[in-house]
Amino acid sequence: MRFLILLSLFLLMKSASAEVGLRDNSGAQLELNKYHFIDEAGKPATLGSYFSEKKPVILVPVYFGCPGICNITLNNLVATLKRVLPTAARAFEIVVFSFNPEDTPALAAAKKTNYVNLYERPESISGWHFLTSDAATSKLLANELGFTFEQDPSSKEFNHPAAIYVLSPEGKIAVTFSGVDYPRKDLQRALREATEGKFEVMIDRVSAICYAYMPHVGILSSPKRWAMFFVSLALLGGALFIIRRRRA
Image 1 (tube, rainbow, N blue to C red):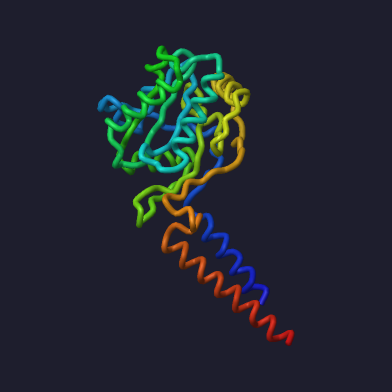
Image 2: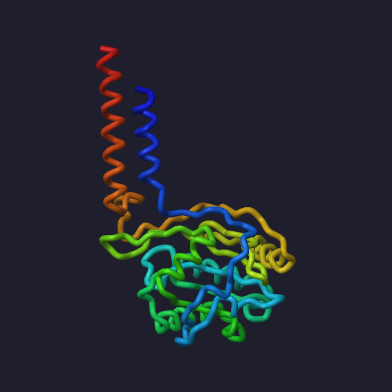
């Protein structure tokens, strides 16, 4: 009986997590030149082309048509960067890549224009990069970062966590910021320490997950999760019924 209860609770938790989330890959070295993207101007580029010997890189996985927290992620990042003394392009690079293979360079260009204007430092324009790619490339890079997402089969939108990554000039993951809150002091320290080759465990503020177009059901955003959810409820209900019958 205890086994049934434990199994049902495990399945409930499993239905609530599984495919979407973050894992801490701090210190991992990305293979920069194996990732091929198309930039906002429609030109091919490797991820490694945005790294130099001296400047760290802020790497942001989003998708440009996201109806949820992707815009919040970028808006909050810009709000913090406006309070950081060093300027993008001079002191660091910002690389935003889409994990939706349907996103286009034209959409990437529109996003870049919007966020460079929002940043209010026109001299930083060469330090902002908005990239698109095929599904395999973005999935592989996201996996190396520890960023797990899935596409909702009904809405075709994406369920995904929110995070930004500060990478060293060599392409090692120095700091992962989980969620959508990026305090100025923490981000400044992360940029400085990434340049110095120091690494931290994931900074977990308030984790945020974007579940596409299903606010009324929260995490249960796929048929597989619904099935697991109902099976676990049935097991738990059966176990509780048997317990009540035995006590009667």
